[in-house]
Every structure is written in structure tokens, then in C-alpha cells.
Amino acid sequence: MNNKQNSFHVDKLGLVLCAALLGTLTGCIGYVDRGQPREAYEEPPVVQTTFLVEDDYVYYPNYECYYSASRHQYAYREGNAWVARSAPRGVSVDVVRASPSVRMDFHDSPAQHHATVAKQYPKNWKPDAQKPAQKENRKDEGHDQRDQH
Image (cartoon, rainbow, N blue to C red; front, side, top):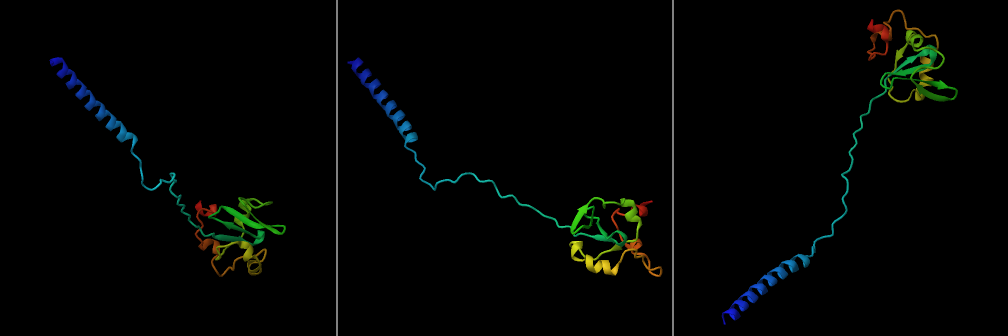
């Protein structure tokens, strides 16, 4: 009878272990997330910072061209179009810089002001001898290399 009791005890123990195992597995399989559906991952938005630099023009009447120190470019008409280049066409930068110049007060396109500027400062214009030359009074951020020597 002892054998019968041991067998019953082992069978009971096996049944409890099987039930525990079945409960554990059922718990894992039976889990369902009933929350809100999740959206796909989205990259955070890119924030761009833009700094605006106002153009600062110097006009060279002899060559009807403008120099922008902030852009490091000369702007002038070529035929019916306005162009902007690192150097004026047909004349060296040193020759242009050595000619009389006037600092402009506008900060947009020279094309919008050229008719008025050209009347006020015609070709071969020279600063008045009584007034100090405007080239001497302007701060030029390294544009006129003669002032650096």
C-alpha cells in the first residue's frame, strides 16, 4: 500500500507541476495589448536658423560697378543683365579699388538704385577737394588693402 500512496503522491505532484507550467505558458500566450495602436517612429523636425547679413555696397563710378564686402562680389551690368562675380570683367581688382568710390546706403540689389546712383555719381566723378574723401571715412572690413599698409 505504501507503493500506492507514493504513486498517488508523485502523480499529484506531477499534476501540480503540469498545471503550473500550463498556467505560465497560457499567461504568456494569452497576453494582448489593448492600448492605442502605436504609430511608426518619426524623426524630430529639423530646426533651421537663418542669419541675414545686409549687403553693404561701395560704388565705383568709373566702372559703374558695386562691391559688396559681405558677399565678396562685384555687381555690374553685362549687356541688359546684372551679374555678380568675384572680380569685374575686363579690369583688375587693384585698378578698380584705386579709383574713386562712394559708400552706398541701400542694402538691396544695386539694379534697383543704379539709375539714381549713376546720375549722382557719373563716370569720372571725383570727390570734392573741400570734403574728406568718403573712401577715407568708411570702415571697409579689409576691402581696401591700401589702408592696411
